[in-house]
Image (tube, rainbow, N blue to C red; front, top):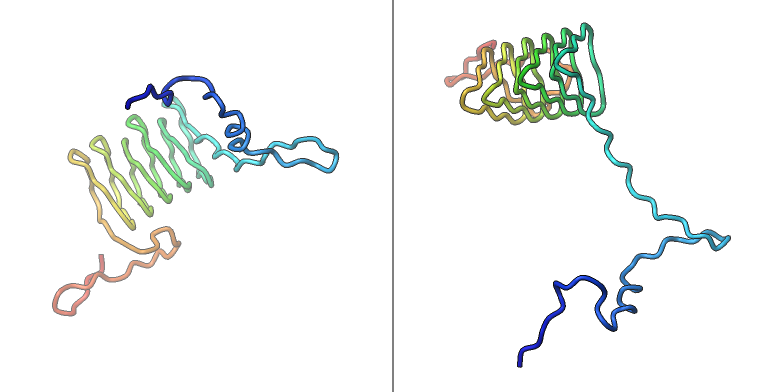
Length: 168
């Protein structure tokens, strides 16, 4: 009625050599008969990191990810930016994804913005989605836009109830 299962036992099962050969993908062969390894997608490069003792004066631009633990005096543009707890950024930040654990003094534009409990932001935030954890300090205005990364510096007037508008 009951039999011992070998599912969790290491090693090949008896009579499974044909199954193993069929399941293993075969590498494509060149005309010379030599096997060529299947191409795999390129791995994402590691994030660029600025250590806590580093001070950068100037703008930074990257298509990849940046992790900042030190001080940056200038504008930053990146795919994903993480501002560490000990970090300070003085300038405009533009990134698809921004996680702020430290301090930003300046405008912040991002598709996805997250201010953690240790965040200190002094400046306006333009975002598509935002999350602000309890304990985060924020001084400035928050504006939602479908495309916050666009360089349109023109702010649209905020529509108030009753049809009037306010410049924010």
